[in-house]
Image (cartoon, rainbow, N blue to C red; front, side):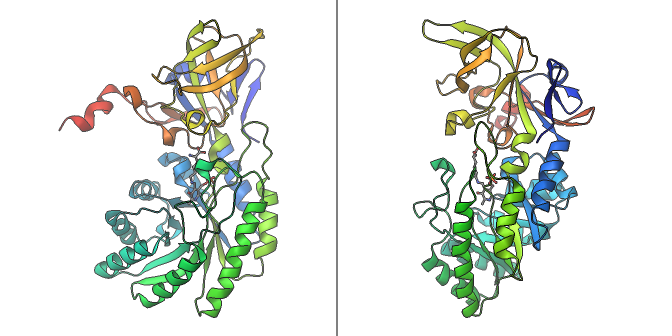
Length: 413
Ligand code: LLP
């Protein structure tokens, strides 16, 4: 459920007309609904009320500081994967004790920054990383709290680029190396192993792979218990999918019930790292039709948003629903919606039936709140889009459109 809906012929975000927002702020434009963000965060978080838990929003999905701040105000923590995400999260007021740091390639300066901030824990992904964190913590006179990311070798049945818990993936430690890692962690004076972690992939549309991974983690926790290692945090990562098209992912409530059933007997804090399920359907990308073009084999709508603004269709062949901002009742046409970038992979949709559009009219790409703006770039020296947050009948700009000076600023050395 989200707050993007047609009222009469006009698409609205909450009480603001999309066409008015585009006229005020220009296109391409990311528009987010604050009410939807709050609703989705709270639906996810309350699904786990039966467990001692912490919901750590995965910042990579949408890292605008105003969005992170909204999560923090609702009691959320964050899952970060870089020094940049740490910096943003602290600026947005997230308490360090609600920050977990994942990722296979943490650099020395990033580890130092996280230790200085005194975050809750590092999710460690290799033995080499453990040694590096230990050395840095010792040098700084600090104790690093860690969990190890277990790779449970479970197929999440999603796009191969966003599967992360199979043995061919670069992520986490297999069970044999996890045993070695916990033993080593117990020997290292500057390391305190407090948790166990797992994230098997993104855009999962069934619960089974989560449960399969969880069973493997629970077995391993029994083993740790026997080794005398007490685990206080169980981090189950993110990955719950959303509806882009026809898929029917489980609702957070159903997901919560299934996991609570398995975990309620444990005296442990469960951490979740949801990204997409919180913000995916809270944002849209609005774009203007620049030209219509007919070739002998295709109809193209050339729009002013491109793969640099929303790379998901090009990278994962993903589907984003596209609708006009204003309903016209015109006949539909089969079209490719493409951007101005000089690549044939630059499309938002292919072979889509849309009402005939005219130059200057607006299209809306839905479900663009997660991995939309955060994956955008300046390719073809395109300035990145503006972002607007709507709350009721108020809109506020939360990231201004980039300028040409922003493009060359770092080059003026
Ligand atoms: N935790 C870890 C360790 C992760 O690697 C990820 C996502 C998450 C949590 C959040 O997963 P979510 O709840 O959003 O599924 N760019 C791709 C998605 C990449 C996901 C990477 N890791 C896309 O646009 O589909």
